[in-house]
Length: 184
Image (cartoon, rainbow, N blue to C red):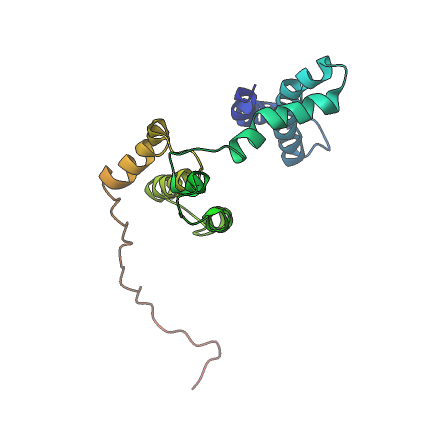
């Protein structure tokens, strides 16, 4: 379903080209409408499965309970965040975990806005950093999570940095000085 949102720039461009022959038609507004529809319609189609149940709100609650809520409240011995369950005098680190989750969200928002223009290498490095951060604050650590960030980290570490393009410095043109008013 999400594939439509990736095709939307192509659809929007073809619709805008066909609309450019019509009078009083703004291409930007058509592109915006097509992009919005190609993102909203597949999402609505995916969540329309909730309407098959007699109680859509109950189905949405059950979806939440069995997916995201279960992951958030999950207990696991495979990370430092949930060792308190053993009552062995280990500290409760849930407050630190929640603080780091909040810091990760703030960092994700900051990465979205700064730097304004990102090179592909910067994008790979920032993506790897955010994924590593997300995996560290998870309650259940598992080795199968490594492939999530590894490709981005490998690109960031192994890819050669692009050489900065230097503009050629040209000497200023020598022009004879001209007076606006004739002086004798």
